[in-house]
Amino acid sequence: MLSRLNQVNVFIGTLTLSLVEIYTLLIKDNLAVKRVFFSTFLDNLRKIVWSCLPISLLTVSTSAIVYSFHIAPEFYTRGLSVYLGGIVALALIREGAPVMGALAIVTQYCSGMTAQIASMKVTEQLDAMKLAKANPVIYLLFPMICSGIVGFPLVIAICILVSILVNYLTSNLLINVTYQVYTTSIFNAVVIKDLLLVLVKSSIFGFVSTLVSFTCGILTVGGSKSVGNSTRLSVIINFALVVILDYIITALWL
Image (cartoon, rainbow, N blue to C red; front, side, top):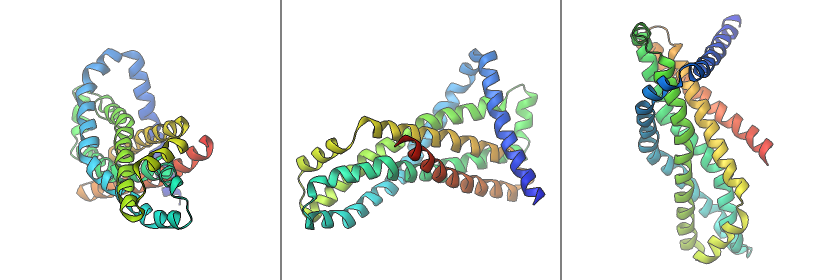
């Protein structure tokens, strides 16, 4: 029991120290940060958008199709077809797309970044960076966090647009709902507050997931088996945090 608590304390302490180090270096030498992080930021952003977009689209769009199969016929039977687009859009914007999209990115991108950092740790590449006066936090963590804050909302926004289109096409085939009725329902139901909610949620998910992934990586000790264990732990923690944070943000926002 004490060993587990000690591991949790070490994890939280390492995570906090990484954030403090970023903050300190940004204040002390922000010009150096601008020089070193931009290319790494773009590379991480490319990995998030280019690599994670297909699996995120597949996950969220599939749920949109399922919504059509279960909701559209029931709404049509009860004469509520004029509300279909708004209900589906709210479900996707507030909960479906942010959570499922974030979990897809965690599985695809964050697990890979944890494995990369862990491999660098066990092969002493991080120590070599420190000897060369290259701070791993600035070169690796800071670009990861920035790309997560930008990349998560970008991917999730695309997923929302595509999944709403998929839901409309499926609903049109099932109950022949018109484009005008569907879009009017969306504009009547969705407000600016909902759009801000999805942006805030996805940005927080991106920040937390990348930070946790990096921390799990740098705490790796051992060989290749430890790399696998750290990657698995990263995915588990991120999955739990995404679900918990989703509930907290929604409860505070709405």
